[in-house]
Length: 178
Image (cartoon, one colour):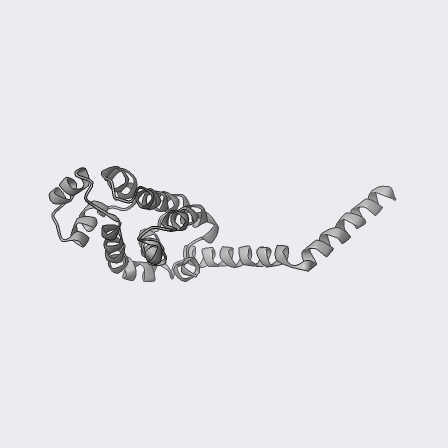
């Protein structure tokens, strides 16, 4: 998974990612949502964003997708707050100056295809930094946390969990009755 490869905490960024994938369903970016997720996850890894910060990034992108266009509010006030240089990088991905991007945003002419181009540029821009950051102690600790989560989930999903809990309940009941 992307989270494990990059050393991100799955549980910390799951809420934002869930919204991103849900927002993309039935839209023109539906087929690109995995790459969008990966690109912004690489950015978050490279910039060492927290789980809450990543959730904010994914929320901003989800809102853009849900609206069917990119607005200045989500780009400037939400995404750029977590991603320094976001506006300039978005303009670069479109091949325009930031002043021209401002005009396009104001006129509502920045669509989801532009968001896809932006995510590709984000991925290319942050890929090396993400690779370096994915080798950090925090990334390794996140991988341990992810595997612990997987172990707990596997246990809960197994038949052994139910029978173990039944045995424990009966044992505790017999101790109380003793």
